[in-house]
Length: 400
Ligand SMILES: Cc1ncc(COP(=O)(O)O)c(C=O)c1O
Image (spheres, rainbow, N blue to C red):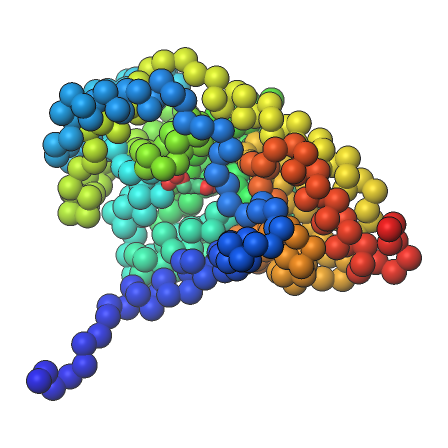
């Protein structure tokens, strides 16, 4: 018998409350749906259209053709070339294979790049609200997670003033996300340039999560990666999860300075040992062939946003924030007298599951987040139930 108890490393403690705990309401709703309750789920952001058949065919044919062996640690050449070509074209700079590593999704790219950037004693600036996994991405490394409060007043667009106010001496990375989940905010060139200049002044990395690049409703996409002045300090992470309605394929990448990407690759190899050649073939195809999936999703989501705005317009307790991108809408529910979390719990009894805003940081405390990924009529029914729930909290406003 060993004379001391087996223990787990400190990372498990740091992450214990940051994983599925944040999705507790989603799982509670799933259990109630499984038990037969009529609950409309507007919790997670899963595209409601199928992965394009052409991509499934490529993956299928590649499997049949024996593309099922080990891949190189950087990723299969056909994919790495396709990613490099995408970013060469977008930035106007020559992006080589040495600038690219393939990952099983943006999430893995963010986590492994962050592990390669910071450690205990460092700090990472994260605009708040933020995507629910970001705190885990940072805390896994042992670095400090520094929330940078953004404001609903300007549509949750990150400003340099907000960054300056939150700045700490040991900040090494800004974890940037535009187009943004959960707010749908899209930064423009000018805003990106100012944020980039801030990072230059403080000699910080920018880790840019661009998974919603193709899901913007009209505004132009802007990225620090496409600004030559920032080339030495920018890493992009992205994937085909949203752009090609293919989250289950787990196919993404990171692109950045060659010396750093070489180092990231060593970390990736120790964790992943390469990724699947048949998925690499399919992803390379996705990146090199025209496809309407994201355009059609953006059209459907804008139509659904209009449905929500129309229904919520009649209710003084609900203050929706029109998103410029993505697959979600934030709604401020504080006028009902409840915060987002209490409202979301109560709403389950009215037959709708939404994410409480505090799953996405303290600045979203008064909000609920609705996913736009259900049919228009289902969304309308959900919206009416949400209004119904809000009206029970507003004296004198009950319609039926
Ligand atoms: C902002 C953001 N980043 C990353 C991800 C995860 O993307 P992937 O499926 O490429 O890992 C999501 C998924 O919802 C997201 O919203």
